[in-house]
Amino acid sequence: MDRPARVLTAAVGLALLASMGYQAVRYGVTGTAAANASRELDRMGRIPGGEVAPWWRADLERAAAEVPGDPFVREELALMMIRNNNDPQAFADAERQMVAAIDARPGSGYSWANLALMKYRQGDTGPAFEKALVNAAALGPYEAEVQQTVADLGLAVLDDVTPETRAAIERMVAAGMKRNAPEILQIAARRGRLGAACPHLGGISRKIDSKWTKLCESMEATS
Image 1 (cartoon, one colour):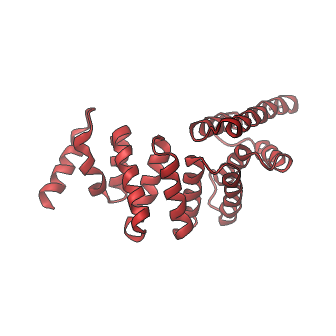
Image 2 (tube, rainbow, N blue to C red):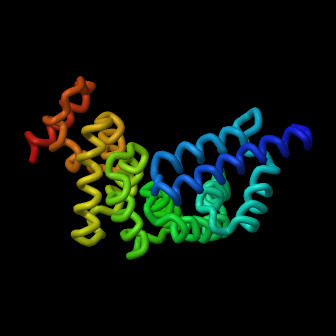
Image 3 (cartoon, one colour):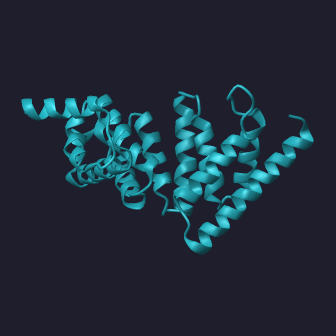
């Protein structure tokens, strides 16, 4: 992409972020609004082949420095830092950006879920990780991506968390089963925790692949 087109794209993206940030502050918009802005910026910041355009992070870093109170910029920058990256330092830097985003906009379940993911990827599943899970569940109880993230990370550590955190995880598993049972069942199966999802199968109105029904029935028969 040539320089004029890049500048135009960045300007459009930052204008979108500024607008979303204003609306979030004025109307308390969180969750879905933030996620939609992030997806749009992600789309604009990619080049053919699925890689992130090398200039996009630099523009976001500049925006974060110039508008330090905009949580959308910081959250998008944090997510970009860890995309296709396993460098521990990148995760540490991204976590600082995400914490700054949360400090500016603490009411987003998506942000708390992303923070929990960053901590989990760093091997930190202590109190701060649990707090992130609990807050994500409380603030994004009806958001599919938040449900799936809390279920995925939570079921991985279910035996090691406090009763409060366990209850939050189980609520999100139950909510996720109502919204997208196949996805939650796959997550639970991958984590070896089908027993946490199967009890909610009976309340699902839509048709579910028979393999899940059979698996859950076999678990009940052997329990």
